[in-house]
Length: 465
Image (cartoon, rainbow, N blue to C red):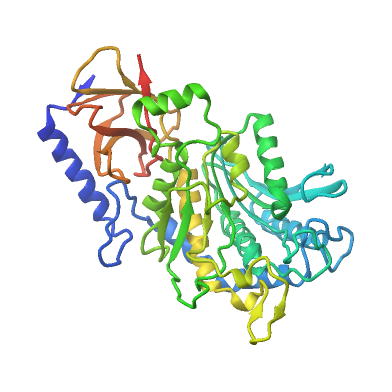
């Protein structure tokens, strides 16, 4: 057992960890902001990858999707020029063109089923997701998913014939997914990344629910899922602009929590330490910096107030999942018929209200998170705090990972009132560590480190009798 020699040694190690993270120059070149102690500065490979993300290609994707007139889930599926079928076929062709440059690592295809009549689905309707999978080269069983929804709507959610351009909601999110697929197809991630343009979101999250169900039935180890929905504009309804912030919605109490899990959570105070909250902290660690040019504003909610998105079916199945959304929505350009009112105000979700440089920065945030997740070791499994005996020290145990480049582990901790991890303690290539601090007073976590210095998300330990 590796034991800290006391609070002095712990504080020294923590200070070193914090200083090392801060020295990375992360994110926060903004006044009054400082990176978390766990921040990971972007390396040369990641910076090069992020520079390849092209706002002009993102703009071309948004305008192409808008050109199909409507992409309503109930619109035409066999018209080559208008409707959701035309959009589906174009998306598949694009993803297959990226896959052709991947050296066989990426495949692209359709994931389809017939939805029987249900809420907002009056007749049996084929719903089709367009999916590309970039297989990992070292740990392909670990899967990371990024999505946007390609269906659109007008004011009346059942109106399948009127123009519904859906530039911001959600051609912007699909453009992020396509640009990530294009850039990453030529690279060799250690773990598997899935790029998905899903349908049926506006009618009730149908496409995402089908995708999540298929992952669950196959026993797929989805370690993280991000949906990009309404990420196209940096301008609020009052005209103010915030072009360097993206919101990341991340739930605390898990949607899939069982009564037994709820009892444990209440007993240890883990409301702010779900796997999704650790994922959100990780995104800030790796993507809130000068390489993306963005501030990641983590919102401690599952989604916007009483609203929802395509990450929710994943959360309901126990997968860590979060939603990226622009900093402030303009509802005149979302879920609106295209029209000009008597005052001359333009309504409708049109591409002229999108900020394509902003979408590119959101894509860089996604890329930084996905690439680092796919390259870094997995979060420690079976992390526990030993509670067999009462003591004012804290003993943590975990299972060693199997990655060939695994270098060791770090213990992190914070005060119970802090939202971010504030102290980092390197503990070496061990599976047990004792800290001279009481588990009653602070929260602990464990993360893995590889030989390249990449860190996993934090694992929040359960109690072990």
